Image 1: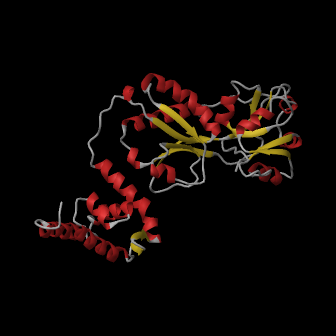
Image 2 (image 1 turned 90 degrees about the vertical axis):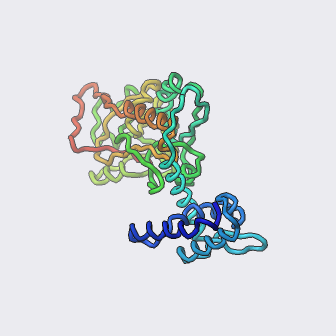
Image 3 (image 1 turned 90 degrees about the horizontal axis):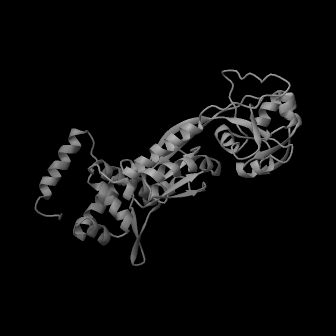
Length: 347
């Protein structure tokens, strides 16, 4: 590709396309802008696109006029991006990845020969639910793949955009137009107590629930949350004697004492298989949570990633199956209204 020969024909094509769609935008500027933002150099961008440096300089001038921003400015002997350019860089890269995926032929791949590591961001509670089913399925279908489970971080969707993470599973607090987000199931929160806890013997009323000692699960160390708000509306107050950062810590505290806690139903049901605890419906109505998986569009048609998303979907759909809460030993189980929902006090 160069800036001579067919240049006038290319300009005619661009003019015709712009006129057809009623927009003066020259779509050929997008790959040039991406190259400039990635290379931080006119010469480097020109080499990437097989253009001459003068042609890339003229293209940069067009981009500057289109954006109303200099994009790259002189700093010593080099160029540095403007704040506007830094803002645009991940968005432009995402558009280019999506365009490349769209225009690439679908690939047939033998998954039994795929040996890459798939990185999954998930709350430790959902990782514990997801990992056994996922690894069992992988052993038969993608035996050479390896899985790295990591916890959430403060960098938002950047690791997904940059390719450091393949998929995120859990509550997606910051949805991004650059990501694909698929709701998997709606989880609700339940109470957890040791088997034989006096609360379960007498029946879980709001008054009885408020009278026992509680463990709160909060990344920020908070002692109160939506459960307390619901209890206050009934004129009740519960005693929270400890706050821990994750559900695993709470589960270690529950079997040996008279503490109770609240956690997602899918997590609690999974833990009940190995920890001597019982589950019960919370006696106050609160909100459910939506559990999703998110990924970057550049993985949309990648065979092993398609497999990963299907495996996560199947594993968590099983986790969403109903459970039977513990029944009081001297009283009938409390009926749950159709419109009643539960939520934990985790923030």
